[in-house]
Length: 142
Image (cartoon, rainbow, N blue to C red; front, side, top):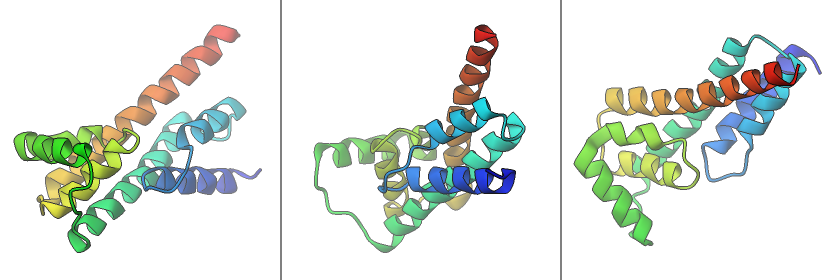
């Protein structure tokens, strides 16, 4: 697989993973790291960009389509966002809960600057940890 196609696959998987659609961006990142498909920093940046844009898509959807309270998670996530503000989006990488946090950030009309900063930082930290563990594991096996 060409490097460009590998990077596009990582971006696409990362974007989809940040939405309610299925995607396994960590698995794609690990596979590309093991295959040596590009510099680690570049793979982390591409994965972070795709996942962050997917998360921001959820924020935009929250602004356009307000959610009805449908579960206990909605109430808990809303309370967290109202109490801690955009810093809560450091958890936007978490499955399901992260999607809900992004949607609610849009619904609550949080300021774009802090939303973008904390959302991207949370997602970047996740990929840095995954990449570091993978690279460390690869070094251990050799």
